[in-house]
Image 1 (cartoon, rainbow, N blue to C red):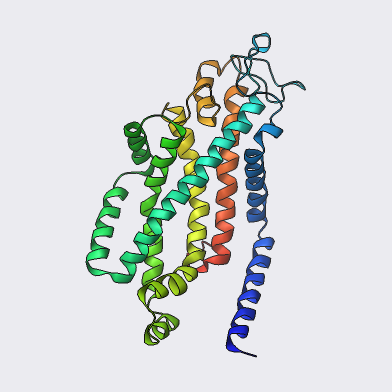
Image 2 (cartoon, rainbow, N blue to C red):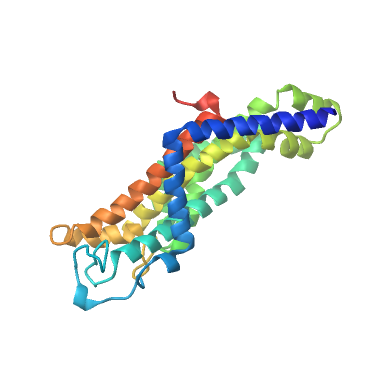
Length: 291
C-alpha cells in the first residue's frame, strides 16, 4: 500500500474520530440543531412566515400572542413571528457574509505576515494592533456611521471590524506550521512559496479558522442587531431583530412581547453558534480548548 493511500486512511480515521467526539458533546449538538433551525428559517423565510412581515393590520394592533398570531403583533398590527423570521434572515445574512469578508481579507494577510515576517509582518501587525485598539462594536458603529445606514454597509462594517481577529489567528497558525517537518521537507524538495502556503500551511490551519468562523458569526449577529437598533443597519419597515427591539422601547408595559421575542431570538442564535464553536474548538483545536 502506498504512502499516499496510508495518509488518506489515517486522515479519514482522524476525521471520523473527531466527528464521533463532536456527536458526544451534547451542548455542541444542541447548538448545532438550534443554529440549523435559524439557518433553515432564514433560507426559507417566505415559506415559514405565516404573514407578510411588512403588512400592517390596524384591527390587530398590539394583539397579545394567540393562535392567530403566535408571538403577538406590534404597534402597526404586523405579525411578530413573521418579522422575527425575516429578522433572523437578516441576521444570518450579515453573520455569514461579514465572516466571509473578514476571511477573504484577513487570511491572506495573516499568511503573508506569518510566512515572510520582517517588513510584511511589521506592517500587517501594526495595522492590526491599531484596529484592535478600538473595541469591536465601537469600530463597527464608527464604520457604519461613515458608510451610511443600510444592511449592506452594516455587513461591510462588521466584516472589516472582524478582520484583525482573523489576521491574528492565521498569522499565529502560519508561524507555528512553517517550522514543522513536512513544510521543511516541501522546501527541501523545491516547493515554491505559493505551494507551501496554500498546499501545506493553509489546509492545516483550517481547524483554527473554522473555530474562528463559528465565533465570528454570533459576534456579527450581535453587531447587526446593535447597528439596526441604532438606526445604522436595516431601515424600517424592513424587519430586523435590532429594529424590532428599537420599536419595542415605547411599548414595554402594554406589549412586552414586542421586545421579549426578538430579544430571545438574538440570545438563542448567538448562544447556539457559541456552543457549536466551543464544541468544534474542543475537537478541532485542543490546544485552545477550555476544559
